[in-house]
Length: 150
Image 1: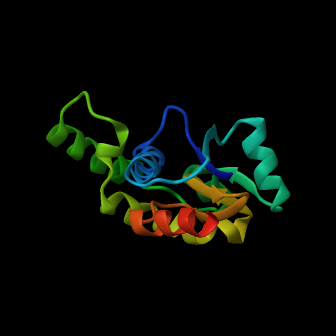
Image 2: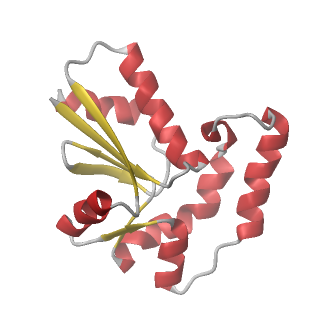
């Protein structure tokens, strides 16, 4: 049994939803045996306990920024998502609002996260091992981690 854990925000932001979408696509495209996917919000007790076992806290880029004494350019982040929303339409899945620029805007917090003791959302773990956190890994990497766990 392969256990996939995705920790994000609720409701999902574009980055958290995109990881979920990529996992869903990979599972539907492959014949994997016994995969269990669990989605948690960063503020749920299970997510907090998972991070604590690793000696870390779990939170968003805002949490990391606060802890590191940095400021997020909320206007740029929102405008990045809103521009995409105008292109895609109002009734879009959050994942459709993701852009590489969004990850670029938040990259400084991803790099800072572990320095200030955080697993930054989105978090992807396979069989209890954190494979990625703080941004959206490519679909091929996620697929490789799942195949490796099989």
